[in-house]
Length: 242
Length: 227
Image (cartoon, rainbow over all chains, first blue to last red; front, side, top):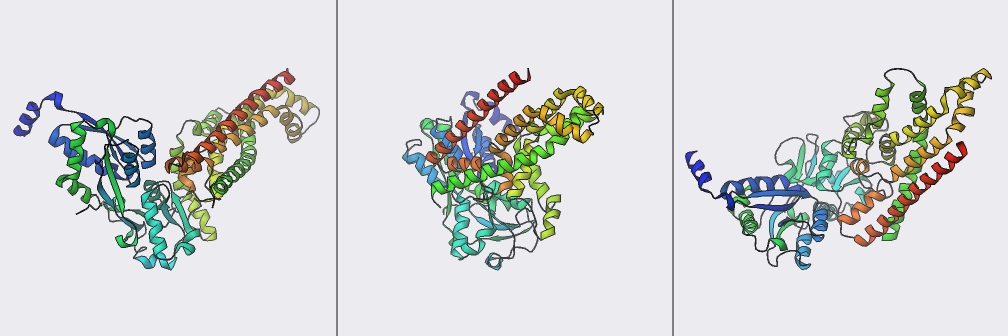
């Protein structure tokens, strides 16, 4: 306590910087926890803009004042790099999403058989064109050869967050959601989809152009990439590159 | 499906939704507006406030409640149980329901104003000529309130076309069933298909301009006729 006070008192106020991070909605809670840990160790603060990856990308392209972009996919981060919006070479995978088939009803979801049986009314997925989790869910359905059979049962959420709402409220009895959305509780029933059934849901980060010389923003990315960042990211139900 | 096919499906769906919603809106809003205009009950403004609430509430609030209302834990789920389903969300009918709730104040308000403008004197005159209240309503009040019906219909239609938040939350983005124009535009922007987004958005701008201009012209002309 005393030590903390001394550290706090001796930390020069002028050195406390503020960085602006655009984060994809699915990672917002995790990012806040990472930022809190980073603030504890550096005194710098993070201001978050939360949105879908497409929205954030469109805003960055139009000159939004952001230092770091935590995309929900690989493609948008790469595109930011290719279009000169991000610092070349700054891109890395900060999280790998895991897909879960989830239902609020107990005993409802067991494994791939649950999908094959077709014993459900509505299957919610995120829009495959707009959300990486949706594209991965389509991969699973295709790989199980169920595309034709399930076509009429599928409803689309615009984002993985909305897809979870559909399932959570019971309007859809089953849905492909992110592990990070259900990792905090044991309600309902779930099947953690094996990663070999879909292309990897890589979520990439980039340092944006205007923060090229911003040491705080660079430090935040180092922290996210480092052991403590990894620990938090994994606690929240995401994977990491070894 | 090709892009133009996709766009046309969304346009057809949106116009169909707006057309049906407008008919439902007019048939629900007319008795409400009539009662609000004529009743002398002290609590009628409470009813008026409930009807007008969607003007203030964010569409996400309405959409969120509707999602629960339509689902297995709400009346919608019980209703869907009649044919063995669990929810009425994600259907065209659900969108009509949502649109009607959301656009109701836009139709009730002009109708109420129009009925107030008809005044009680015209109705009393009709009564002294031994017209039944029903007769008087159809042959006196409705023709006199024509501008209100026109304004209400245009607003109801246009507002349904422009609806986004509620549809986003209860629609499920099913092509040909619930994927309306505003959702399609959102989708195109999200997926960086800005050419398609531009085409549809420009179309909406033109549509909005025509609607507003038509309103202004109608009001001007009717104002002249009535004066």
